Length: 87
Image 1 (cartoon, one colour):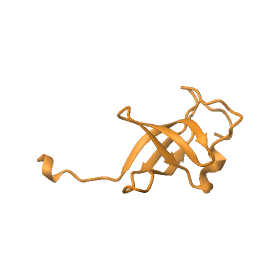
Image 2: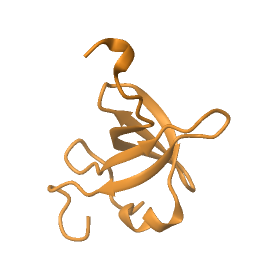
Image 3: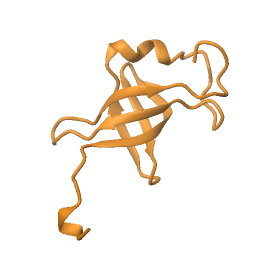
Image 4: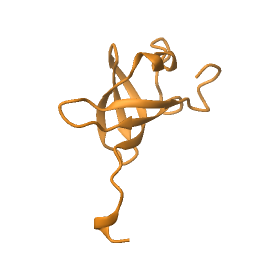
């Protein structure tokens, strides 16, 4: 398929790396790029500020890469299989 005909997707896969503040998180995309993204309140139950994020227990996320000036938005969260119950 020619490069001109590749579908353009607004979503990217990544891993939740760090809590920054209230609803803002640092995400490492699958290609290694670090971004900041907002998390809607309906996903807050996935994040426990009392549990330290490590390379073993980082939830995977799908991020909607919205148009500027809007920040990227987390639209799906999937818990790590190593996180233990509830994550």
